[in-house]
Length: 366
Image 1 (cartoon, rainbow, N blue to C red):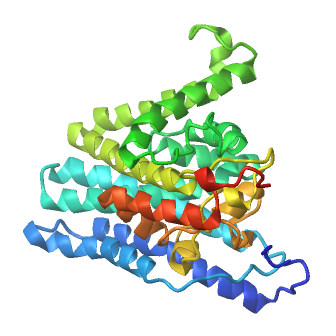
Image 2 (image 1 turned 120 degrees about the horizontal axis):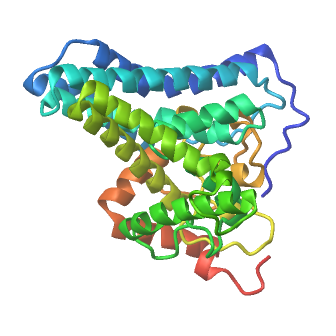
Image 3 (image 1 turned 90 degrees about the vertical axis):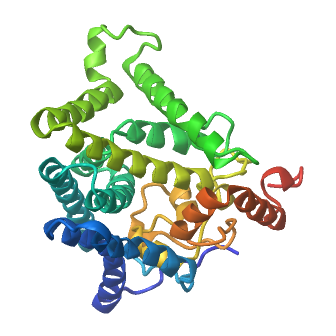
């Protein structure tokens, strides 16, 4: 059943305020990280209760009510863009506080372990999720901010591969970020990380006009992936030089946690699906109706509509009934696939069978 047409709906200040306030749920984890890092160093077991914000997020998501309402037409961009700016600023502040804290108080402490868990998850949350929204924007400054955020988790090449690789090839064997039917989370991770980097590198080669140019070719100065690698690792090595190996290790770990979460999401967003049309349709991406995911991850859960209309702002994304549905929201599904991957694949296979998608699609399906 097609999504409801939102063009006839009238938007009021009350509608805008309601949706905006719901999206403010995206501040729960960043603010918790900020509060933790601004507090004093916690000895022994005193740091562990702060991990309840992560446990609580997963629990809230797994038992979240559904949100199937369609967005009001023509919600203004500026209040929702402000949320992205604030989330980006909070991420930079939190990562800075983390490396300074570790430099001053040491790496091998329970306090640092909890800080790394909180900040690593938040980097996947406030850096990569926000960056994903920003790199799709047409305004140059927003796109650039998205690239900067990705650089803080040493994954700037994602901006090239995601826009010019994944969105063009999604649901095909050529797409490094589409998980194959039956593919395990570990196999996908080992395959997709180097494949995405190589694809991004080749895409920039082609943009510059030579698919095999030397690294020393002067045109490589305009190679965006190379630029990203140089800048992001320059920042990392500056942290090593200025703050020491502990801070450097903390910076790398928060980036690794964030990337692991990104690739867990990439894994389930198209798992087992095979595109049958030239144009991407609603059945080429997995969705969830989780209200908690929708409002904490700035609309990321409405992934089917995002792939049909990649330039659509997060607050305008529609719920599409036709898409296959995840067993939980994004938080719950990530934990599910990491902890019980065999069972996860069984559940996803059953949903593909129900929807007659992937390997279960009929030959004459359109």
